[in-house]
Amino acid sequence: MTAPEQELSDLRRATTRRRSDNSAGERTRSRPTCRRAGGIRGRERWAGLLFVGPGLAVLLIFLVVPIGLAFYVSLTRWDGLSSPFGNGAKFTGLQNYRSLLTEDSLTRQNLAVSVRNNFYFVLFVVPIQTMLALFLAVLLNNRFLKGKSYFRTAFYFPSVTSSIAITLVFLFLFQGGGAVNRLLDFVGIRGPNWLADSRGVFTSGTFMLMFLAALQNIPEEVEEASEIDGATQWQRFRLVTLPMLRPALLLVLTLGLIGTWQVFDQIYLTGNNPATITPAYLSYNQSFQNSMFGVGAAISFLLFALIIVLSTIQRRLVGTGEDY
Image 1 (tube, helix red, strand yellow):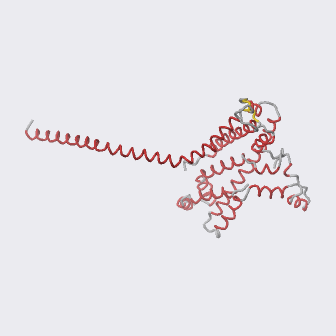
Image 2 (cartoon, helix red, strand yellow):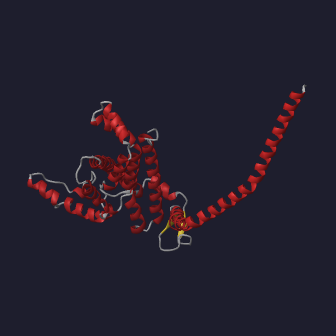
Image 3 (cartoon, rainbow, N blue to C red):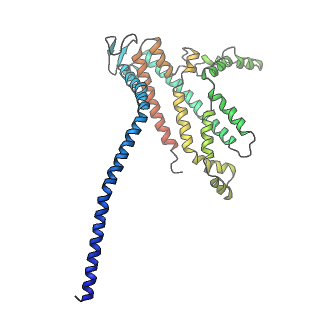
């Protein structure tokens, strides 16, 4: 090896050693920093738990514990007058669920009638209120509409009105001698007793706001591009707007499904009417009218399972819209 080559080799080895020493020094200096960062992160975690602790405690005491207690009651025969953990409650296992699902009894028959009534109610209310909310949202999203604030307030106002008050108004309108039948008599039509008809018996303001927020979140460039491509107004709505509204549509349909299967106060005001009874009201009736709290709790958990299954099916049919 010549002298210049030897000098070049020595220079390369020296440079490599310096780089190794620098890397080791940097790792050594970074260790205390990592420990300090870990300490800061640890204190942040404890601070976060301290802030969310009261909220978690409230949820645990007033939500999780009552749900667990209700499930335990559904496995017992309890009259509600004594402690559910004392001698007044007899543990029966799944007997309440068997009497509701498999045994031929009046309780099972009432549950089947209530599910049928509620199913018809869901089929009628959910599609109508969803389409009405979407129509109102599209109408209010029109850039050329005058008085948008007034119409938004007018359409949303019924949503903050008490459901009890709305139900009383409809009872007044649709009872046997109510205003609707009076109008039908005026034109020669004999109206039925709507609330007692064995064939069976919606506000959209909140859902309208959800659709309106989703519509305003759609980029204007997308609408303009489809318009430049020659799409008609209906084609733009069907092929561009509606697919991009799928997350909001799924939310509205899910909330509507849950709300209609949990309907109670309207049914409570109509009384114990077989034509309008629902699972939620049947659970209340079995618990507080017949003192069969175990059966009432079992009905509520069966209703919960039914809502979960139907919501899952609906999610698969509608889709989440994540591809948009």
